[in-house]
Image 1 (cartoon, rainbow, N blue to C red):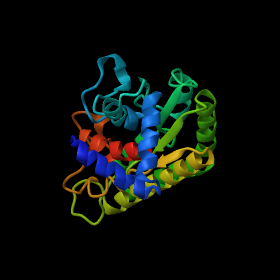
Image 2 (tube, helix red, strand yellow; image 1 turned 180 degrees about the horizontal axis):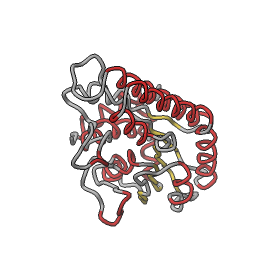
Image 3 (spheres, one colour; image 1 turned 30 degrees about the vertical axis):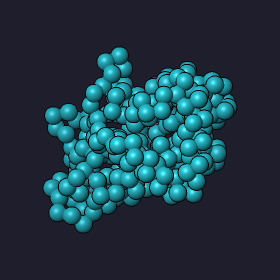
Image 4 (cartoon, helix red, strand yellow; image 1 turned 90 degrees about the vertical axis):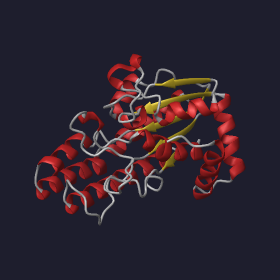
Length: 268
């Protein structure tokens, strides 16, 4: 879903207020980012899986021209743009494969990562195919990983990002809630939906804390996706897509442009 320049500006301004930033501060930050290089890191939520229009040279990383990093680059024309986010990436994959473009001239970095470390795909597969109790048990295992292991991995990754890009504004963007609760909706039980939403909240809390510990900015997309979750009737997220299973539980093109892009624009 494309927005007019006026709508994009208003959306960015409102988000800036919500982040306790002034419009002038946000504009200055965006201008500074555009004056330097922008590097987009992360997993499938950053690469744009589910949005279509994939860049052929990106192969199985499935980087989309409808993903929020590509859209931001088109709107702001930074001095350079490196799009290294990749479907399936975990924190170790970002460390090993995505940080090459970072340097002292990098002015802006975006990243969403952590869901795959916590076993996102296996959690969703378990919850789709098995019982409520088995689903909740698998979610509890993921939550325990988020508490015990993920913070250290994020801190290590963020430390390396800062060392390689000492002058960059780094924006860590989280994950949406997946379901609008209390609705008549085919598929998973309300018990499973509520537990999945709770797990997303738990992960976002960990991401926000790790970002704050490094002085990075956290962009919370749960508000922009509000009313556009699965079961809402106007979802910006794919439910189970049996024809292209990789799309399942990923943002649509509208989710990238309407859910992720405004949050990143307001924080960049």
